[in-house]
Length: 300
Image (cartoon, rainbow, N blue to C red; front, side):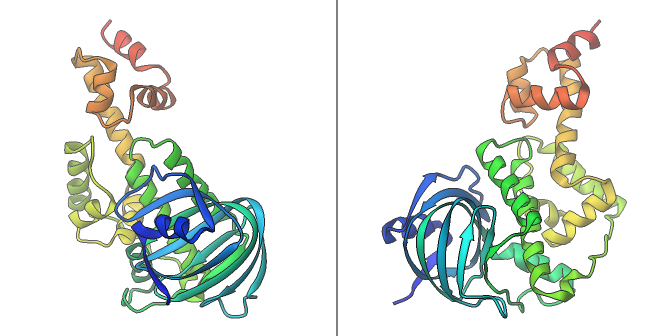
């Protein structure tokens, strides 16, 4: 009998099936995506992904693999899969995979809503009426770079971590759809936010520097889907939401360094940075000096 696999059950299902071992629990584990590193040996997989898309990047090792699922038209079912390749499994379809060999791979589980948002924005159509095809052993540098950036973020979360992770997941969804549908190659128009819409978003970010929520929270402020909001925000400001949030945090930090006697550690958490060391590193890169030196010079 085919297993119906939910996102939060996938790790347990893989381990109990005996073909994979999780070597690094996900640090990035938001409500709509998470990522981890696994070791995978010889064995078989048979199941259906329930409501999430599975994206994997091979980090090391090599597999001989035979796949029976909804592959892209013309794709071979027997594959030799090596390091650097990426693979994607669409949800709600039966998948059977037989593997021989040993492999280490990054596994990212992305909620279906990212793909629906991307599809709706690209086609200006019904986001509930689309289909994707699975692929394995593909070499795509853009997809791989997004996955590696997501893994780096999981290992060392930074300011604006949730926004950044969701932006990367959106990009992966877009790249998958562009690969599979020629109509998706059409450029998405870069609509800009109105002054009132931008003010609404910036005001929310400023008032909730420590945790402004994810992209879905910001998009809801201007009644847009996440995909369209992200593009409109960058078209308006020149930077993605997570970068803008970091700048707002640095502006507030400068004010507090001048006008407050709080310790640097307290200021780091009060302005939304994950730690004092992370705050110091970002401040040094953007301002050219440490927070302590900035405070000293500003008060002279």
